[in-house]
Image (cartoon, rainbow, N blue to C red; front, side, top):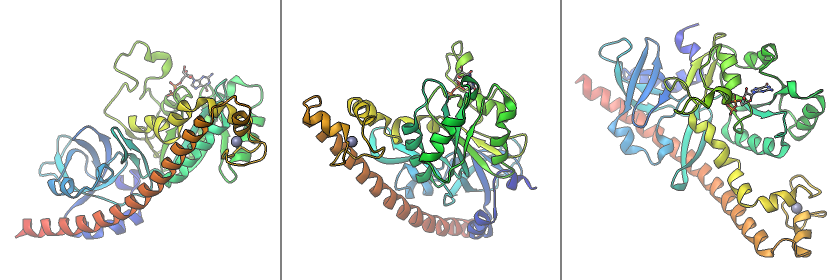
Length: 360
Ligand code: GDP
Ligand code: ZN
């Protein structure tokens, strides 16, 4: 397999890239994102890259900037080798994307990882096991375009993971559920198999469920500091900040970015759930798992309002926030789709023009 294919390049990307290739640009995949500088992997090597002024100018929002996992069109560097520097002229349309709201602007989308094929939704089979949280991660995953696989880690802590697997399977028909333990590395081979050659995987899940430990097992060395050893590492969890996209020994690709780690706080409603922890606690008693607390029979939240246990205003503000979030999500989806299309057109044109001018 060629190096590009090892990086996840496929016919679909190649087809989209054709006009850019004709213009003399080469494809590369973003492996690291700093504030204004990117590291990209291309056929001949690894380069540092900055976005072109034109791309910056045409970007309608932060979502239009490259993210880790993105395929981009770059100038072939003048001098090759590890120190090569290049310019990113276009971002290819994404096959999937994970995003969060940009800090300071809740409607602005910031892409934190792109072109992920399979996303492992990791939970721990310890005291923290929470099917509702898994559901919220499922929503995020379905929204992203990646295929979700549910991973119940720390299976070594329970006598029989079977009932847990069955419970989670019942709430997610059609989604694979695997109980694993990073204490038993052979149990992770099922994950390794799902990130085969040219496939890109990523992990999503609350802090402490064992994501770093699993990444290290899959990579085969300690890429990330795990909670156990992190205490002495004041610089934070990534022992190495130079890798957010790695090629696995078995040739799959794994993406783990700080932004992916923060998704839980933003997109899964844990922020709202935290603000409305009283309602969340009451909702545990609702008859229906997807109770909207409107007029459902057996709604524990409405009962609590009626009995005076919960002030009616609490439920009102909860509904307001929920509706507002749903509205924003819809708006954002439509806007993002339109903008991606428009930007892609503009940039293909711009790149062609740029190359023609350069040739003249
Ligand atoms: P992260 O925050 O999701 O990246 O979680 P870490 O990888 O840092 O793991 C959190 C803690 O769980 C660490 O102390 C790990 O050693 C522990 N851990 C990870 N996987 C397992 C497992 O399969 N079984 C048990 N018992 N502990 C685990
Ligand atoms: Zn209810």
